[in-house]
Length: 322
Image 1 (cartoon, rainbow, N blue to C red):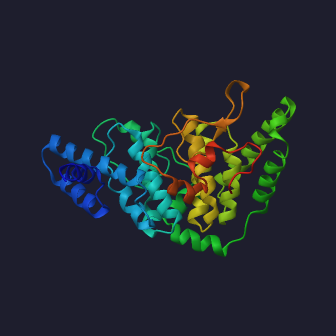
Image 2 (tube, rainbow, N blue to C red; image 1 turned 30 degrees about the vertical axis):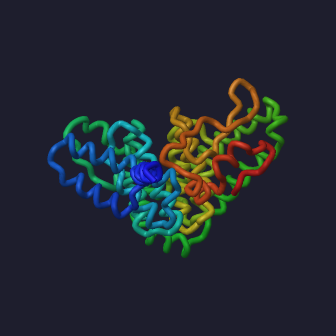
């Protein structure tokens, strides 16, 4: 009996709190004056929140959105900032209105956490020092307008007509990849890269001119940016695919996750949704470095429709789960 009681006590101590309990603890931490005590409470909430996520205890869109709000302020660890953003993405993909409206501010906070300038500037900041770090390097206005008011943007998109030139460009982008990558020649890769550069240059002009209206326009433009070469291309691909999702294209969540992963990999941060593959040194194609802390397969399935194990065991000649 003593052994059973001790085992129960240990299990109870390790059992994660529910969201309501963590919300109460987070509110309590905000009201604590002593910095050391406040930090300790934040750490406790963060640890138990990670346990909830990794234990797959979050089940609804509102659960994901509520959990995203509980991580402590930025403290040098990028993973909690990523987790808060990812949870908001999932909640928005599942239709949570508050999550849809808060994605822009979450995106800017994430960019700051990985050492980049904000791109939306939706929330004003009053930094006490280092103001240059908080400068906004704005993305395209057509993107910002969707993030600022997704409901109104969705109405405009549904009433609009798709841009035929954007569709023509993305069709060419896909046709350029219509070969067996396991047997690709240097000339094929060179031709594809040259074509990608030309298509991306034209898409950039269209986006800058505000030439995107429908969810399909944003989704198609995102795919062309996804085949860019620098961080800004991948960040824009992510923003465009998020816009497509906010405008009502639920299937755009795959590119939301893939562009996010590609952006992270580009700056040396492990991917999260497990969508990016490579063959360093010319070896076999395999899943690139990934991080499993504070993310789970429910999130992956809702965004990119595969689990981590499925991604790890994917055969390269199998199609992506789009």
